[in-house]
Length: 274
Ligand SMILES: [Zn+2]
Image (cartoon, rainbow, N blue to C red):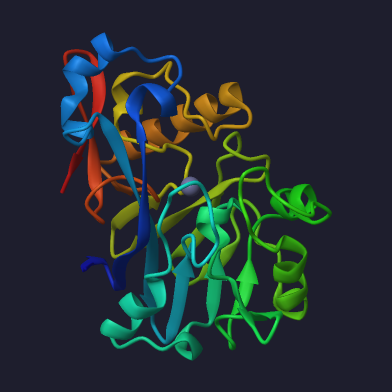
């Protein structure tokens, strides 16, 4: 399943590598079942928040930029990933067609398809791509040998893309109409992407916001936020921007493989799929 959007001249293909789920009260430890009563539209029938591993493929002129790569074959709890390559193939996209891979951050559900094991060695999955993420993110993870609870060969991944890595910090132009926006907090160097073309604008938030419910319940921090206070500040900055000019907003784990808009009702913001 994939969805297509256009932002001015940019063509966006939204695909998923798989999904994870967790009870709402577990993922957001500050939340209670009673509070979730008014947010049931974000839960499945078992009370779980379902998080797709959304990847955004953007075509800008002759450039093809992939934002985030999903979980891939890595093992993490009972999450399922590994669909990205087939999803891209179904859309007529070959791994060698991608010229840039930008990761919003280096959690395994975003970097799982950067490099794949082949003959006992990690090999870059997109052979012609430059791999990009922020300097702060690189510095934080580069010497880590593993991520707690997340089975991925991080040193092997770094080695596989060593000659192809190029940092992309706040404001960097990844391709025409595709710019990096620093949104730290979820991880130290977490960043989103701003797509702009022909007077239209869309934000790809990565994990700056994990679930749309956070627009309504601003004090709920997701389990994965390393610095909840800083994450909260980043959320406020980007939501104010998006609300101000009716920009589209998409994120790695929002439902529906879609963009939506930040609207306001009863004095609170909320996200509505477009
Ligand atoms: Zn994530």
